[in-house]
Structure formats: C-alpha cells, structure tokens
Length: 248
Ligand SMILES: Nc1ncnc2c1ncn2[C@@H]1O[C@H](COP(=O)(O)OP(=O)(O)OP(=O)(O)O)[C@@H](O)[C@H]1O
Ligand SMILES: [Mg+2]
Image 1 (cartoon, rainbow, N blue to C red):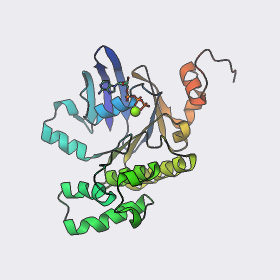
Image 2 (cartoon, rainbow, N blue to C red):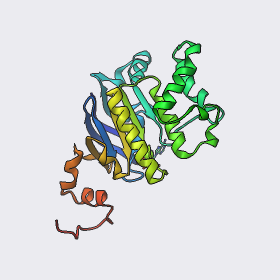
Image 3 (cartoon, rainbow, N blue to C red):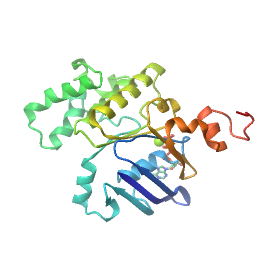
Image 4 (cartoon, helix red, strand yellow):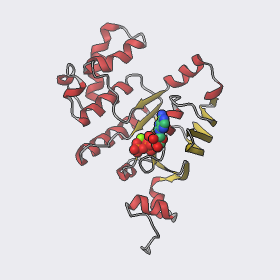
C-alpha cells in the first residue's frame, strides 16, 4: 500500500502540493485527475523520489521513504515502474537498446536479452520490425508502447503512468488504455494513471481528483458522476467554471 500524508512542496513562493493526503491500496487501478498545471507530475515525482517534498510522509509498503538509506530506497524503487509523460526514450539508442538496457543494468544474461525484448514488444502490440528503429522514426503511440515495454521489463509491483495518452488519436487512446488495463490484470500490479482525460474512467477502479494542491475527492470511479462538488461536477463534464446551471 502507498500512503501519502500531509505532503507539501513549493517551488520558490509557488505552493504546488499543499498538505496532500492519499491512500492507494494494493492492486488498485487508480486514476489521478486534475487540470493541467495542478501538480500531478510533481506529485508523481515526489512519490518516486525524483523530487524531494518540503514536508509530509510517503509510506510505501510500510516504509517511510524519507527515512530510508540510499540502498534501502533503491530496493523500494525496484518495485516501481514509471512511464513518463513524454515516453522519455533515449534518442541516440534504437528500440532494442532502449528496452534492453534495463535488463543489462540489472545483470540479465546478455544472450537472453534479445528474446526477452521481442517478447515484451509483442506484449505491447509491436512487432520485431521496430527493433532497430530510433525514437525519431516512431509515431507518438509507438513511443508510448516502447516506453511501456521498457518499464515492464522488470515486472514492477507498482506501475505509474504519467499522461499515457496525451497527444494520441482516439483509437490509439483506446488501445493504450486497454493495454494499461491488461497489464494491470496480468501483473496484478498496483496501477496509478495520471490523466486529464476522463476516458480513463472506463478502465480505472478508483479515482482521485487533485485540485489546489490537495486530493479533493477519492472513491470508486462510478460514484464520481454523483459527486455534488461544483468543481468536480464541472470538470468531469468538461463544463466552463462558474456556478452550476444544470439541475440533475
Ligand atoms: N522542477 C520544477 N521547478 C519549478 N517549478 C516546477 C517544477 N516542476 C513543476 N513545476 C511547476 O509546478 C506546477 C505543476 O506542474 P506539473 O507538471 O506537476 O503539472 P501537471 O498537473 O502535471 O500538468 P499537465 O497536466 O500539463 O502535465 C507548474 O506550475 C510547474 O511550472
Ligand atoms: Mg504532468
């Protein structure tokens, strides 16, 4: 389980995370939604240790990560896979190298790297044809798939995706969402998807809404449609901000 308590982070005098609390159960499929610039990526980066919070606690499987040594922390983060907002492939490496590097870094026998990479590519719906292509030669959807394949190499118990579908066409969005769901089920991994696209509601079990540096709603996805909070009501229906004019 991941437990976040009173998490606080500012950049200069700009408060981004403002005393945020959130509990994420094992094997949940959680969507964290919120408008652009609300601090979703900053929240994720704090969870995975890329940004150090100013205050608060992040407890992963009973371990408060701010109290761990570097080595203990590495053990915790071995459980986590992170698919970055912009795929974050290494431009000077081809697909095979981008994916295989994870295995080599983790002392995998070199002769078994290629079959494993091909297996992972297939699991994300890509063929061997892309093995020697460079990121610049791939479409946005293909890059996201390669990014996912790379993350899946180490079979993480916690899988975190930052905006996995931004900038993709509606059909590819659906395919990527289905892939995330299938991966969640196959690995039985705790899955966290950051998104401002409410399409994710069709797949996630739980939803948490980030607003003004806090989680203002968390609950089963189907219940959010009944939520009376004006901000949430309007966000999920894509309405302009302002007083609710619709009576339902
Ligand atoms: N390293 C940083 N240094 C200074 N400010 C930062 C840093 N990272 C993020 N910010 C600021 O924090 C705020 C939240 O950014 P963040 O990237 O978390 O938004 P987001 O909710 O992920 O938005 P989007 O949906 O567009 O990805 C922004 O105002 C951003 O400029
Ligand atoms: Mg972001």
